[in-house]
Length: 537
Image 1 (cartoon, rainbow, N blue to C red):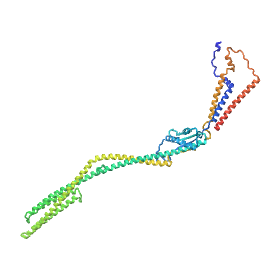
Image 2 (tube, helix red, strand yellow; image 1 turned 135 degrees about the horizontal axis):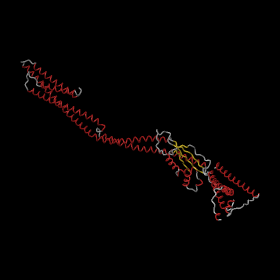
Image 3 (cartoon, helix red, strand yellow; image 1 turned 180 degrees about the vertical axis):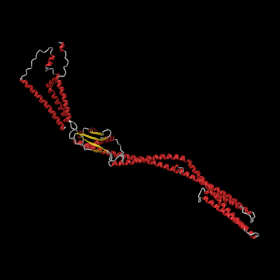
Image 4 (spheres, rainbow, N blue to C red; image 1 turned 90 degrees about the vertical axis):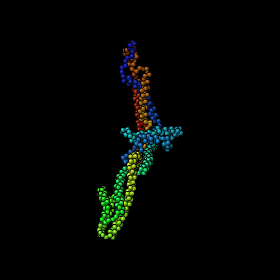
């Protein structure tokens, strides 16, 4: 007996058993399904409706190519949108919109201004739209939720205008600030450049003639001075020789004056004049090989040759005049001697004049040579200082070039920034453009009654399954033969069939018909409510 009462292993899934449960407990299932759906669906119609209005704002790129005008504002659009959003969602801006459009009038007496601002911030939604690479913002949506669709549309329009105008003002302000900053930096760079220019000018004034740029001219001048000095020294040597010659001639002239004059005596100065002529001609030939006929030294030597030749011709003429006097004529000899004495006196005076002129010329040349040596020493000192001045000038020039490069770069940037600012003022730069005006919502965004309908149906099914299963589990009655056989300790020998009267059959048929009608009404009601939620909610 104990073995027979042991539990038997499961026989698997019995669909007929579940069908029997559904048949017996269908009302326990349908009523919770309907009630659960009805409660949630009714709540969706009781909750206050909120309408969401939205618009799309496109980010328009600058109409002017960047190759011609480079924008001088930040290209980080996402950061700029966030900055504009913070400004628009500030307490002052939102309170102004709340007061202007009379928002949240039902909460004015119960909520503080800060609470109203927080509520409005929750009702505002900003959604960025990126490109395919998810890196660049190409547009963004602005949404606002309100209980009145017209109010939602008005607030969305106001927010859209604020975004567009704030972006223009922000870009213009940033562009103007950038231009002002560059102008200030340019003025600072201009002052630094002026200081460098003044230092260079003062250095050039203090060291005029010693600058590295004047090296070649100093060398050329020094070479010319040295050549001129050499010429002057050569001329001084020539004058000294001429002075020695004139002094010897003057001494000979004085000697002739002290000696008795005879008719057949030959002037002793003619050989000396010949020697002087040969020396002067040799000097002329040497000078002619280096200089032209117009050179002062060449002309001077030629004049000396002419004077010497004249003196030689005068001496020869005097000699001939003395030799042609008739012999034995005492008076004639006496007059000839007197004439010769007078001519010798004139020659002596001429020699003295030439000697004095020669001495003056020598003094002038010595003075000129001293001046040339002083100039040469000055230019040599300049050349000796040239490496030091070159280093000093290089240091000044380096600072000047850096200041000038910085000034030129800032000037270029400032001009470019001014063009960009003009472009922003003319609204030719990057700007926001509203694609479509804010929409007028015809259906509430919350609650979504169709979703509530589906959620209510799910809750009702879960509740119906729980109620039907619970009642079936708590019911200890037996409804089939198998359950009875499982409880009996002995095997069943025979069965007595159920005897059903016609009245019971009609009652069972009516009950089944009512069950189907109830199920149809429940599902028809659910479908009707879903259709109403779809078309009106």
